[in-house]
Image (tube, rainbow, N blue to C red; front, top):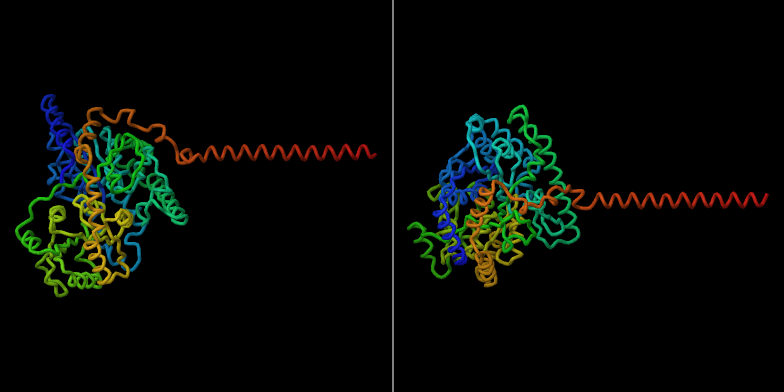
Length: 529
């Protein structure tokens, strides 16, 4: 599968122009403080492309090895790594979801925002890095939990861009003036789509407003003091103001997979910038997949944050019983590996792997479906490789992703609570045997691939554009929209003024009427006397 031929021509022209003019070797600092490894994937893909074009990239994250694999200098403060490990090690995401409980409470999510900031900035490696005299031409921040990283932006006095890794979370874009109409923007943690009834729109709007209020409180009363303490006696400017000064946003979405939205010129959709054509499988995987016959193979992966090996025994038995009933072969990502002691007797058609090359498998013609947790990157990869998907959402944006993919017709959404082997088997068989799902997957794959240039090339172009201009030129900024407050954006100040004016006019008219009535009564009494 390839993007338009124009894409290849565009890339060659960029390379040729660089050879003529000489590539500027700029220094770029990438920062992602997300608590799951999936946050690093878009950064790593972009890093490889930028390094290949001669740029120097440094990446801060909680996951050692990611930056080095992407050709970047790695910065993994022990405080950050240990905090994220401690925060996630006791997660019982699948168990909580099966019981109908929130896997992560809103309070814990808020705590993460300032605790991860303290852990990072108080680490000796971070302090040494900040006082090393380094300079950067551009910073790229994760749209999720980006507030802490704004301290680095102030310290290095450089423009910054965002990679909005959680594509359905539009608050970072709204802070820059992009419209976020609550009536058609499902809250990223909900299972709604853009078509909501009255009660859903009410709940959706309340969730958006509550989230914004909590975000304001978090930045004002926790992040701001932490940054002021970490970056010297003069502190840093208002974090609320700094978050409105991003030069550009690489939005991890696309109208063919997420939702059509009206973005300002400083936003480029780059969904699937990490996606690529399949590479050859290892010999053992190729032998297993190719030997599946006409029925094909089903890939089962719950992502990097949801550990299948830690799933409750009841859910594990459901999976095993379901896979035993399938005619397809099953490749199941099981973090303990194939040689681990599996509690149940493993069906003959199931192959366990500690890690799987998901894109290489999804691009294999013998793979017929994906069973997934509903993560955004897995959703993109399944669409890119045109594979129907069965989604079992667990937490964060999984419900919203699954709802959108199901509404688009290439996925089936199942609830973990009350899941049975028969329901899982029925969903897998339906996704495979009903041609509608394959047709919809192929349709959305064509929509995604039919672009003038690939998402990765677009991300590279806009990154270098901001580097060339040392920040975003004003014509890309929605300055007037960006500087509007929430009250001004919703015309609440005008409505309040009109209501006050109406009240004053009505009150004045009432007083005049009362005075006239009294005068009339007084006149009548005088005449009577």
